[in-house]
Length: 410
Ligand SMILES: Nc1ncnc2c1ncn2[C@@H]1O[C@H](COP(=O)(O)OP(=O)(O)OP(=O)(O)O)[C@@H](O)[C@H]1O
Ligand SMILES: [Mg+2]
Image (cartoon, rainbow, N blue to C red; front, side, top):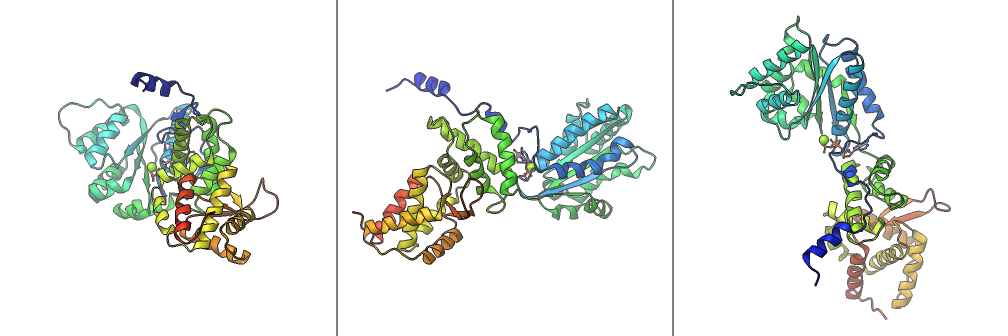
């Protein structure tokens, strides 16, 4: 038995596929934002006058889109860049990012803004209104402007209520002679929180809405490619692995959530390290996929209701994929394996048209995925992937089910 010290030392010094794992963590701000160029441009247009004619009018944007579509990261990247540009033009501008999931009350939002502006506040207990007055005074004295991003705005809207929102967003606009120093970016997963704002702000925001659609597989592919280059050693992640993750999570199949795609990539790399594989394979991705999307294992239960020949086809698919260590196999290859299996079991194989119906049905219940072959494959044919977890697991499960349904293995 190894000593704990040796175990720990071995694990620490064992080789890894990661050059820089931090680059896959959610808080990392990447150098580029593929496929968010349009959103950055729209933000720039909304806040343009803040640089050209600072203080003349308040500027506001509303960012809306589903989970993991890059709202937070785009807002942060925009904030960082516009601060740089402002500095070049001698405009004093700060970007402040408040997560309203954490700070849901007016008091905590205002305190957080003050904290990020590094505002020295008296230690005695101040009200939100008093802190706000300090902030305004501080900005006035320095001729400074601020963009306040209220991320996960719906939490603040629901908890703090319309009066608090009005106070934060509108009160200081109501002094016409004063410079407009407070600008806002509202971030939300849907537009319902808009209803909590005053009608004037609402109609303004409808025109200043920036939408974040879910990412397609191709878009995720580009995002992942960028990160792979930063986070992994060269050559340890195959192009096929990246394409596979992008296919799994792309909006064509699932939510188009970049966070999930990056998480699958990170976990696949960690599994590869644990297995000391030295490279990340599609099987590592399948394992990571079941960890990130545990509902997949529920699919295992649906397998037992499948008729024998669908199980056999599925089994053939798993066999071919395992053997080839690929994400996808051509339908023809799987069919050939299926025929061999039937022969082996003394069963009469179903016809080709029937096989096609199996594929449609298996895809419908979610145990396989398909796509049409493109680059890297000769001719056009249907490719089949099995995303439902590690294949060795699945192979065992299918073997048992086939046996229980009368398949007698020689
Ligand atoms: N275009 C992109 N390029 C590079 N990385 C991206 C891109 N879009 C999103 N990401 C990354 O994906 C993850 C999720 O993005 P982000 O947190 O911005 O999503 P979100 O829209 O704010 O989601 P939520 O609604 O859950 O808060 C982050 O790690 C982010 O860095
Ligand atoms: Mg976010």
